[in-house]
Image 1 (spheres, rainbow, N blue to C red):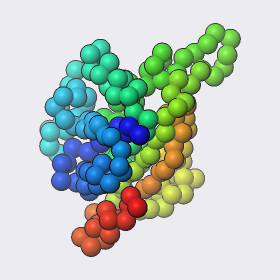
Image 2 (cartoon, rainbow, N blue to C red):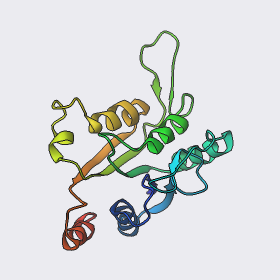
Image 3 (cartoon, helix red, strand yellow):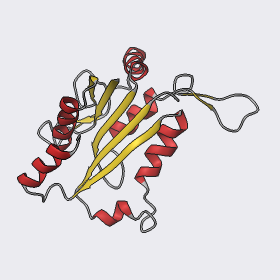
Image 4 (cartoon, rainbow, N blue to C red):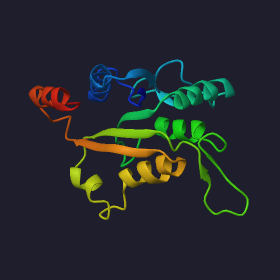
Length: 188
């Protein structure tokens, strides 16, 4: 199986990156990695907490390269922190730019729903949240349903079946032992 790992966290020392590296090491698949904060990606990104870099909109070449990687993969695996009840803007921009009409779906005249063009792919989503667990696990409290939004409104709209969705909460306050336990048992 061919796996494309997409990481959306500016901190290379984050637990998000540790999870992604652990997945790549232990999944047993041929992997490619797209780090949305890598300098080769021209998305909106933070250089530091104080400085927001407004990059130009991704050009046709970058979109073509990313779509080639998406087309290559059998499985897409997303790793990101939850900010303000949602994914980072850089990941939303990645979806908006690369999961475009004609590539990920195609509208047909006279039909309400488009043809899903990525039906042979699967996805896994691993997100980390330092906020209270109940805000994201009980969506009716604030109307936030991140799982539905990503798995149905984005990936499902394109025909991608999500096989795993996990939200890790309170990582900031967890012990090193707990983090090691998660990394050690996650992919078994």
